[in-house]
Image (cartoon, rainbow, N blue to C red; front, top):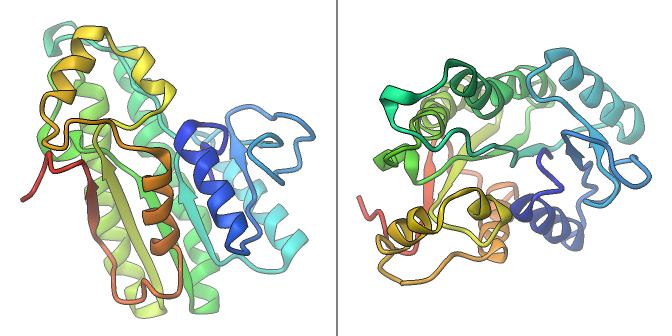
Length: 232
């Protein structure tokens, strides 16, 4: 899994491990022992670099002999500016990490999963993919692109027993909220009918189900985890 050192990723990694999965944790920089054994010991993975993905997948296969699924939980917030002021480098970096990073991951992981006729992939999107957040054009566009990427990949690999889905949270209790201004946080929270921020445990529960054998007839979907913000 990617983004394993983050607030959502680390919680999900712990949840999957408790349920018996051998989780290989990765993040943008290595940490601890760097063996991927826990969120505190992440293997370094630059999601924007396809050879890095191929290296990680090979390492997993060499160590465990198989790969059952993947959780892509990486992402960056990107510039918080108006469309007319969006810097090209900030736009490119945000789409490179959030969207291109998942494309490279799917390109490396899916051949392994389809080859054995089974697999589960879950990807972190965002409620902004549904609605678009003002002053977050790069982030919203990158997450909207993921929704289409998931639909496309899911249809391509469905006959081979592999599912691909994404999760679209609204505000979650992670350090990404610290990257937004207090005014932006207040505006976003006002849109949530439940009136509270989502918890990493709630994300982990949904991700664990999507990665389980039980989620066998669910593919190509983006499941909202938004406290009622989006009910379409």
